[in-house]
Length: 166
Image 1: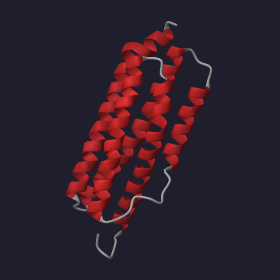
Image 2: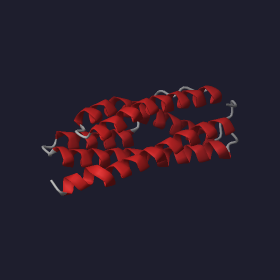
Image 3: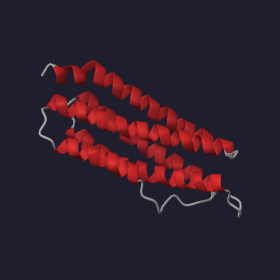
């Protein structure tokens, strides 16, 4: 990036640092969510998303390298709160089906946060002419949307149905 940084560039850097923090918090939370899930399909979904999240962190690192800044130094408070809500669900005394339904809800809140954040960062990168960064961010945005749709399908096909009829 140029010596003179414009306000939109500053905002983009801040957004990317926030996303980096968020993704690293998710990497720590997903194994716990997988362990708490009783549905094998849900457990596998969390495990697959963990691997995907690691690739998303790599993409953020590529963007930071291309734009010449460090991703550290910021804590994503939004993700911290969402993960705390997920921990509360896991601490409840719920039957297996209700727990799985609660885990899906918590995971979808995380996905929606990420969809909003990646969409914003991608738009800002594109507006600044950082086409490679915008493309990498779009790739992650597409993955987050696909994960959200998979969670919805899982909830509608198995988990929530079983929770209602438990």
